[in-house]
Amino acid sequence: MRFASLGSGSQGNALVVEVSRTRVLMDCGFPLRETLRRLARLGLDPAMLDAIVVTHEHDDHVGGVLRLARRHGLPVWLTHGTARAIGLDPCVLAGATLIDGHHSFAVGDIEVQPYPVPHDAREAVQFVFGDGCRRLGVLTDTGCSTPHIQETLTGCDALVLECNHDPQMLASGPYPERLKRRIASRLGHLGNDASAELLASLDTTRLKHIVAAHLSQTNNAPELARHALARALDCEPEWIGVADQDEGFAWRTI
Image (cartoon, rainbow, N blue to C red; front, side, top):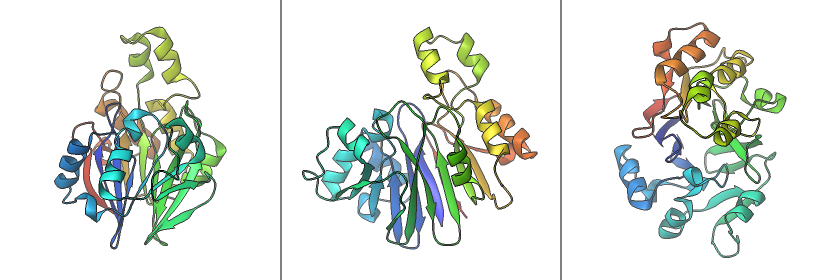
């Protein structure tokens, strides 16, 4: 099982998970040509993908999904709320499947476990991907943790965990006050301290990889995210990976 990011941040997000010959793309917030370029960087092309799973309707996550799916005949899995939010009639897009945020499903060799998260979207979910032995947990857009999130992510072999902002940088930064309140709210995004608190609450004895993701280019810095998560794990900051907007991160194997 391996995974890689095409890019992570407010300008676009996409993550690839591979088990054996099955590859699933989680979200696609990039234009088609840019998506193809970023896939090629990982040694992939759209014909090598088996499905797209969607977390929610914000453009940095779903902006490129429908065009990629239609152009290359890829099935799309998304919640009913997300489909309504983007105006998608599953009968119009062949291969679109509505999912329940509490029920797992399989795409080839990959078990996909969606789970609901508090975010300012119609029916937002995040995902845990498994191969029967190993689990990759992804959490990139939530304003706060919940007992269900903790239960779902505990014991994972790898985590991609949102570290959107440093609270002090956000408070003193250039964003309008209304936007600051939205980001810091229970329906916004996890800051470094909240992500570290969540991480500290999990069973991490199996953890082989952790990557800080969805960092704000204005209100955070990689070294701040690394140090926050390193404190929670009592490890060296250099062990913490960071997904950036331009490069994402290269393949990691569990």
